[in-house]
Image 1: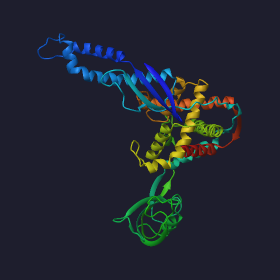
Image 2 (image 1 turned 45 degrees about the vertical axis):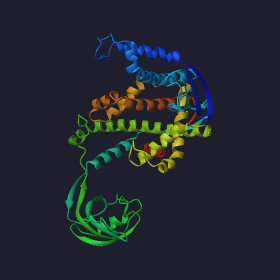
Image 3 (image 1 turned 120 degrees about the horizontal axis):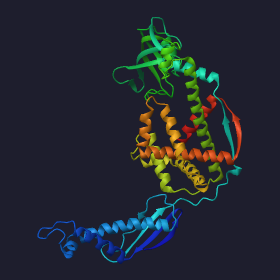
Image 4 (image 1 turned 180 degrees about the horizontal axis):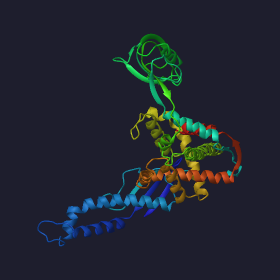
Length: 437
């Protein structure tokens, strides 16, 4: 086999492959000989079918199969011999010559990853969040758990802040009624709706009564046909309930899987969970900050267009809540710049790992799976899910590898401490995730 590589512009490479007829003929003859021992043809004893009959009946199909197989294997061999780093699958550039007889000649196009110069992280300046889980954080989470288990009891008085109200309404806008037919029923907690006008209206209506009010719906309102609009609303308060927080007693504590039912054990469990959340939040923030510095240091690195296109398409599909579908190209184009940023960051993280021989550590992967499993009531099922799904395991391995890259950079870059509270770190991590999506 002979191979030549030509730069076709940018990251595109054109492979020209020549495979002599003798190589193909040997494989075809071998396959036909194998078939002659297996096929059954009327009039001939098994294994005694003349080769001329085998060639006449199966020769064309066998050659086609061998040619297809040869093209695939020769391309893979050519990629290895030329030390190419493919970013996409090779695609045949022109109709191959020699499909039916003679030497096989064809060209294929392939996009490769760019050659990235050595990344020197010694001059990177990064600030690392420093926070600790304090007793007031544990107490705040305990109160949150009580809120989650709050019991609602019906009352006869008018509603006030903190109460739960069941309401029904029909809104009349310039475009018509919402809903067009029937009524809309909602359960709201006064003071937590983000809709002050609605809260004020509910407070003025006794349970079981109805009133027509004028409301201006906020832009963020969940019903698109009402968001940002003024409407005349027939509003009925069906019922009002007052919330009662449960006591932190043995039954309450055991309800969260703390077997001994003691306050001290519950607080220890809360602290452990908050410390895990804090650790993960710091990792998310540092990954975002590292990628930002890497991109800033190499803003002009050339990106494989096929990977950018696939990333933009995936981002569009996820936004439209239709993973695996084919979104409109105009929608895909809207995500292209964000896709470029994500691909650039991932490429540079990968280069850091490769240049510094950072390999994913099996022990860290196992620890990550154990950590995830520990947050579920049935940890064994989560362990089985990860170890039984190669794709899921691969995704987690990629995450762990990126965390190892971040840890390595923190040991070799210029790192300063940034004092933060637990809530500031958690909020910063959530923002980092939102901006990367």
